[in-house]
Amino acid sequence: MNLTGLGIWTAQFDFQPAETIRVTAQEIEALGYDSLWVGENVGREPISQSAILLAATQDIIVATGVANFWARDPLSMYAAHQTLTEAYPDRFILGVGVSHPKLVDDTRGLRYSRPLQATRDYLIAMNSHTRSYRAVPAQNAVRVLAALGPRMLQLAAQYTAGAHTYLVPPEHTEHARRILGPDKLLVVEQAVVLGKDRSTAREIARRHLRRYLPLPSYVRNLRRLGYTDDDLGHGGSDRLLDALIAWGDETAILQRIRQHHQAGADHLCLQVLDSDSRGLPLHQWRRLAAITPDLVTRAIRTEAQTNE
Image (cartoon, rainbow, N blue to C red):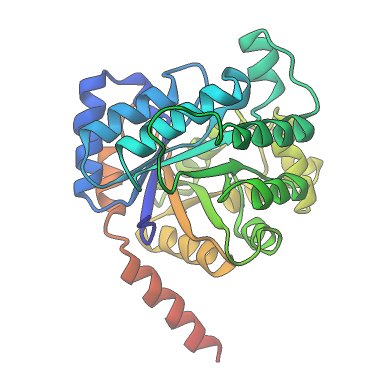
């Protein structure tokens, strides 16, 4: 798969008509982005939405970031992955994950329990369907696991092509790479606010972060990285906001991208945050498209030469 540049991670498609997301996906592809990631909460079903996006575009990689284990049995997930990979070779990544108790117990009316064991059992069950799947088989089906903690990262390395991390600073990327090893795929989501006004950027960032701080898996991960109650309370400290969400102009965003790549990321997908959380940030996507792979490589080389 061609994951040499940048991707886009977006939740805003859920709030747009299907025809709008088709046209927008075509523009994102024309801008030169390599991948387009959509998540799962209480909006569109992400695998179906991936099919819409794949059909509307020519070459861009479409990925789920991530499809919830609890919403589908292992055979259904396996069959969906095979179906889209066979129809669109080398263009679909199935990102899967165990989600959060709030989104499983409260939203779906199911029972969230033993997430690590549930993930291991689910991935083993998916792999077992290689022998029983009766449709046309797909070649090179790529699956990644949403993983933050060391044991979940180990599962990603053992049972999948790699890991998709979310809401992490570059020091987590370095930690994840050590656990995954050199040959596994590491795709990092990076939230960004394109704007130089500090107070506005932090206000947008804090509104975004407030959704995740009640979720235990994110809090545990941040505590492992050294963040304390002072950082995690009241919508997040400025130190935490600045570590997790890059803000500023294109140069500032490039700096954060470079840090993740140097820490071991294979690919970054940028989630643009805006004052309108449901609107399509087309202007920002167009501006950020100027950050090309060559520009990232030059920035890394320049810093290396400076440090010599």
